[in-house]
Length: 373
Image 1 (cartoon, rainbow, N blue to C red):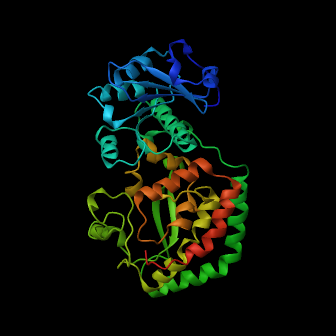
Image 2: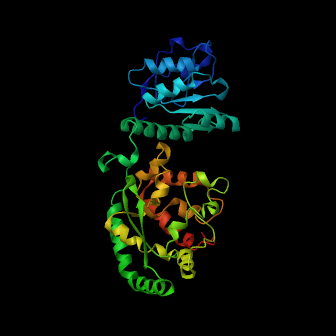
Image 3: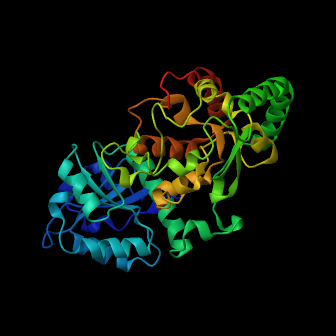
């Protein structure tokens, strides 16, 4: 939070919970409720690193949140040992005031993680209470406020002016235009040569054009050199069991990627392993559908599965030819959906000219991938 909050009266704080210096603290930047007591235990409070903590029961937390006219509570951390039947009521009152609710434990606990999933909690966090937790809380607050403003409306129904914008570094669009325009001009002989070989190798169009969802779920025509046989899209269902993202359960996958994909042509495999099939996307950048660096625009069958608040945040960043996941995990068999989504969301929140330059410099070696995916 940007503004400091005036602390509640510390008169009721037990003397032993605060040392002399902390008892004098009258201003703090965050207020967090910690569910770490039974329903009958008295509320205890303390200040740590400019954060005001209240140890309460779930029932007490509900009462505190309900009494706030404009919520000054930043988050609720729930010790899994003190979860009661009131947890659903806590979720509801917290939702109404856009307050994140997290299951929290000092060490990783598989049962605690399962409890977060079972009760539909916003997140599970373990370890020391550090700036990492505070950043996570701030992120979740933005998402919950956004959801509250949408009043439950699906993301795909929002008009462009209704979708909140992340802050992009200055002149990003001008940079995209200059670089993509220059690159298309310089690479035009190579583009013509690739187009000729694609046409001679197999019947069908030179370009593969598909509908993709980019920034703000904007749908546009996405250009690549065709690297698969004609009709490859119709074979997705038949090949679902080979998806590297869902080896254990093909029915639950979001992303689709196959190692040694049988639909790829011989020259198409060369184009993919060198990423030359991506060059036509410079046209998408030039006309404004994409950026040089951003989050990968997704096929509609993938994008429609990514509508939960936490995940959909990645659609607020520009769609890009390259991005964080391409330079870190692309082509690796151990890439998980969670890792890819986390990298996409990280870029959405941290984009800058220096990050873009870093990604672009690391993209060239990443293009020469070893895995055939």
